[in-house]
Structures are given as C-alpha cells and as structure tokens.
Amino acid sequence: MKTILLLTASNIFMTFAWYGHLKFKFLEGKSLFVVILVSWAIAFFEYCLMVPANRGGYLSGEFTGYQLKIIQECITLAVFVVFAWLVLKEKLAWNYAVSFAFILAAVYFAVAFKPGGTPSAH
Image 1: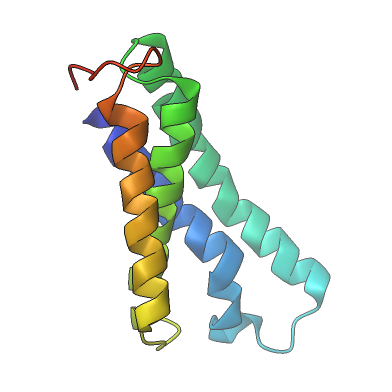
Image 2: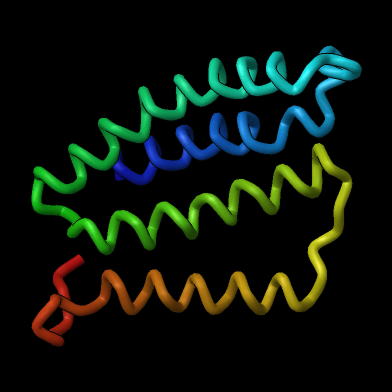
C-alpha cells in the first residue's frame, strides 16, 4: 500500500509539472524557458516520491518492474482525469472512459498472475 500511495503522490506532482503550466496564471506571458524551469522544480518532488515507490515496491518483492510500470500508468491516468476535470475544466468523454477501463483491465492482468501464468497471491 505504501508503494501505491507514493506513486499516487508522485503522479500528482508530475501532472502539475506537465500540465499545470497550461492554467497557472503566474506563468502567463512568461518565456518557455521559465515555464520549463518551473515544471522541473515541481517534477523534482515527483522524483523524490517516485524513486522510493519503485525501489521499495521492487526490492521488497511486492511488485515486478512490469507491474510497477503498469500500475504507475493507471495511477497517472486516474490523477489526470481528476486534474482535467478540476483544473482544465474538461469533461470525461465516453471514449476516454472506455480507454481507461481497458487500462484498468491491464493492471488486473499484470498483477493477478505470476509470470509463469499462475494466479498471484496479491
């Protein structure tokens, strides 16, 4: 659970680093260089959470590298859906919702079975 919480927190920072500048009023009229520096500053905190999440999840034997990546992508999309709705004021269209459901199915298949094809104990 610690890994999932760290991945979620890191993805919140990353979403703001990648997309927040689209709505940050204080960046209006600033050069692209300044926008990039602000984004990097935000992304620093993402790395401070993502690295321990991946390291702990992998080295503990809780998750494989593939599982961590697939889970991380799913969390990224979940965080982005909330961000797009609250910050960008965009609605979740049906085709995006279906796409998200397929990614959730990918997480299930990634963690429900051991690499040899047998169900996992997760």
